[in-house]
Image 1 (cartoon, helix red, strand yellow):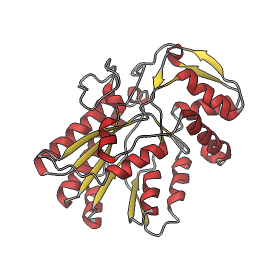
Image 2: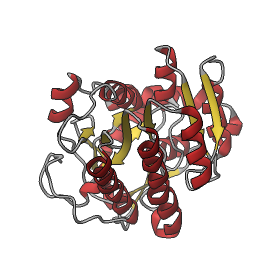
Image 3: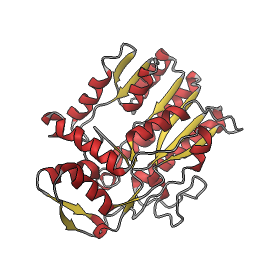
Image 4: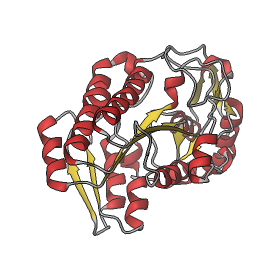
Length: 311
């Protein structure tokens, strides 16, 4: 939604696609959609990427110049419960997008990958040059597979493609299954929070505005190599300890957290840390938002959001 809004503000024509499924509250997805509908150059298509014929027809009709593919079945833990949702959205869905780009000569495909591909990588910070052959979740495996699929299409059909490995994206209207929302909701309502691995976790939290800035800038950097495929990390380059993250929410809400200390969750990793030198060199940009600033903005949004969105 935020990427689409920025493009619309710049005067671009944008077609938004989503299936508005019920993985989490559809009212939140509808709220996001309502932020875009006032723009005259925005059109929304409700469609599932798994629908081969529907996606192919959309590409033929619209003749897109560029495609920014941010759709996926997200979440590490849910991939253990419902693996086929990930195969459908992240593998078949990626294939329909690639085929659409192939048959309609899209100028540049920018797609979302994930820091999850690094798994339990011991080398810090995580670099795009690191090997990522040991995923610790099915979600991570599907995102790595998406990178390989994009590379193959770039090589076979000269489709310029750029993958962006996002690091723990958060901000207003973010996903309700992630820690910023879950912890804020619990603390505001005087409920305990589950602190995994006894708090010995670090995340390279990246505020949504910083992610958007990276996406918008990188869409203009079309790969020109023999195989026109590039990969970039987009992270804050400053891992935040879980204790500091919780303190930021406490400060923003004015309440103390009640903590339940638990062990490590299956498929989770102890630390993420983005090496951002490659994207800094490409577009002259580095994320700037601190966790304290970002969580204050999220909490402000959450406390003023409609009850239907938070239910």
